[in-house]
Image (tube, rainbow, N blue to C red):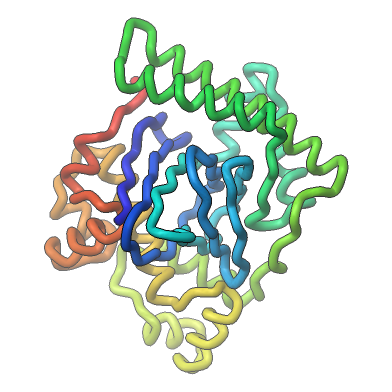
Length: 289
């Protein structure tokens, strides 16, 4: 079973998700247009990024680029927990820079490519876990000044991560991942990301790009590691979460906005993806004012 909730967010800049998986669970692909950092909390798991599979432990942090298909897979029925930081990097980097933190994300991208794992030192692993514990407590208790406190904790987390990134780049310890997508598949990924709210599928996309549907299905699977239907679903689920936490639209409107004509079908898929109904997911969200 999977439970996922958005515990913090700031306008269109970032969203912070808490995720736990335990017992029997069928993993689903995820994808969105933003960068994502996965921070460990407890336990171990496997992460698929396209056709690449990584074993992720409690000292590993994962960086995923936008529109990169990925899914989390349990190693066993034992529970593991992680925190995902999904971020509009150009906006967030300006905020970090204003605080004196020059986080070289483009250096990270150019040198580590997509989906790489950074291994934290024991000291910094302990620091980040302590900081997330403090962050959880502040969000839960909402004491006076908690918003400023949470923002300061996030800043400290990225200061620590920035040090580890430069360390990894300096000694070449970061793992390389798969090469970039072909021009055609990259264009299709962009097309889906821009048209997820429409009635699109394998046949209509194949027709638009002048490709035989069977060939498109094979090539998309070969290059991304997932079939095209899973990718469309992953993009829709990401934007559904964003609409739930950042707008006041009702569930029926959101269902239509992400390409589902049936609210019951949308709710079923959302429950499978997050372990929560759309209503429960929205009610559990804390927003930065």
